[in-house]
Length: 402
Image (cartoon, rainbow, N blue to C red; front, side, top):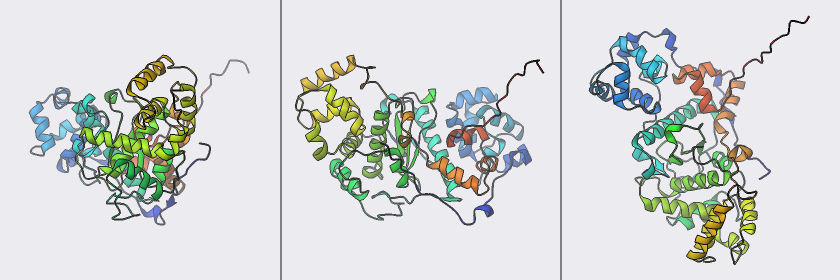
């Protein structure tokens, strides 16, 4: 995993002429009231992880009134709008109609942990995905991102109309061939996904989504995969989650998410995509050897737990032997070769496409203030989704000595 994969990016030739957005400082509550977009209220509330009742209590109105605002049957009074923006931590301009909006329903996203997530957590995840797309769209007006090269994706610029096999194992093999990956270990998996036009995002830890592992959608102009750090604090699980979501994108693009069979198929795809049967089988020990599996973990970029499952799946371990292997593996948790390794130690496994696009756009005149104004987001929100840290001056206390 030494060579890094960098997606090709090009500045749009007319970058400097592409300006837009509205400054919230120039807006009055009356103007926002007249052009109020109810879907933006829903998005902001979901991003805040708030119920309608909680928002109503904070505003001093009834839950029914909030429902009317979101359905568009009524609008918040102008004098209520500044408080609404304050409670939801968005600029007043956020509620204006007219900006590109990726409207997703929770039924349009695949979640790895549907049964353990609550409705508001899935709604927050979907609203987050909407914002990832809006940020991508704003940058793509200025920077040419990699073409979407994903067979079966209806909006892809490469392989249009070409579908992969419906069998998960065959689909994994076919995608490896289409992407020229050979049969060996896949290095820098996340960067490779980005290089093929897939938007991957790994947000900051969020307590509201502790049970959300990963999710994806192919219902947008670009496929999007979100890998949360809440439960993917290990690079090997992180990579498997990315491959699992890739399986959803190529196998279940038009299917309604939530079927346990789809989750099993995505797991099968991920296992074959990361560890092809013909290549991994000769390397797996005929009898349980955790030391050997630990070595293979580093080579193939998959967890020892996954390799035990793969050995069982390929007939090298019986169910009882696999069960004992998991018990022994649990006792070794935290030991060298078996301890989790954070993705931060593997730059090629962390998303960088949007940050690179922003940096390139900045070289051609874009500022983060302008981008925030165009999106009608707080600057801190733009920094958060880009993963761009705020550079502050280093201050030192001077002694009284001259």
